[in-house]
Length: 120
Image 1 (cartoon, rainbow, N blue to C red):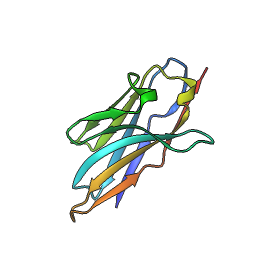
Image 2: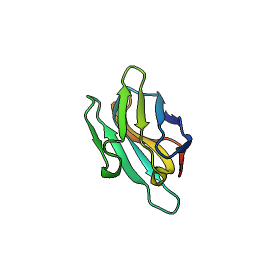
Image 3: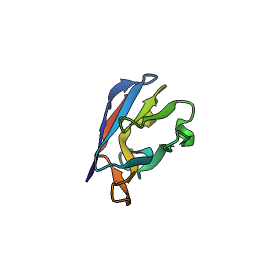
Image 4: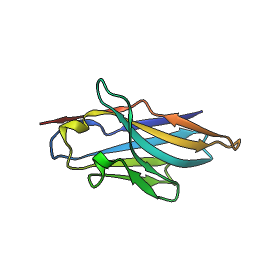
């Protein structure tokens, strides 16, 4: 079994910054691609950013230039740096990862989410 645990959310004023961390643990052989999604109240979950195992990244247009995704393969962690936050960034942020287990099977896992609230 694999667990993804997000941390680092909170309340911040517009223009401020937060750093989210996703820590993966359990039966992990390789942590492959990982990403962040978010879901605002009354809206569908949307993709925010993705990072491959070799460090290639891609971002959704609303966050380009403001958010940065990074990873530490030795620690099996994936971070999301949120800068220049806007009230519309308010959402629950979820970590998502593709994990290759020791049995050489790949599964997709989700974390439980962390709340980010940006006040105007």
